[in-house]
Image 1: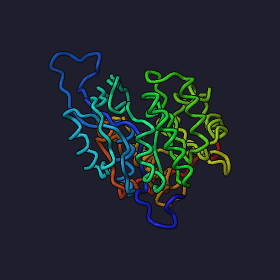
Image 2: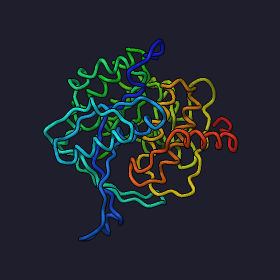
Image 3: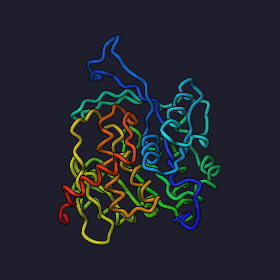
Length: 333
């Protein structure tokens, strides 16, 4: 892995979109004049970066933000979460935003404003300006959301993945299929290009798997993603289990720690990916990195919004250890 013989400048880089988050206190269909709401900051890239930093990795965000009044508090929030924002670029566009309503049972509703956003201007030119960072990092996290924002952002995701892979670094990729952003054919094409470069592919089943590899069965989905070239695949299959297939034996389910006080699951998958990638970059074995990712994701649902609850690694490690002693991974699927 890049940097193994010395000290990489960053353990983890995260390439993608950051968003202004407006959290409504009621169901969106019931929202009326005067409905209370609060502003925060999220987006899959920021969520994953915050989790990676909390897991102990030196982490930087590679993104484009706008020139509106919310850019300053957005970057301030990212820095407060331990993420280096010194490489973030600016564009004379508004920041993307979304309105979120969520309840403890996991029911969520979203309304997005992304058209002509600053984040959608991400391009191969930006990636080229970050080449030195990418060749020197241990790991990169990116996603299908970043690749779906625009033609140039799709090219940027591919370019960054090729650079990191070519330098011997690790790539974590979440296809994160969003039909409002991209068509199934385009998402499948991007997946086919990225999968052979990917060390850890995290995906959901049945949602992503049905759209991208044509199955709602987790074990079959993992096999199909690996057939595309991904070295290891983590498939979330409902709230209580994750299937890990790394090709070294039969795929196995790993238990997801139960959170006794869930509030909002927004960003939990990003928290898993950021945490697991950080621990891989820091040298942990895959199974341990995945268990830490699951623990962090479970803890994260106690907060509102994508970065409302980012657990520190001591808490994550304690929950992972408790889960390992009380519930081993199930037999092969």
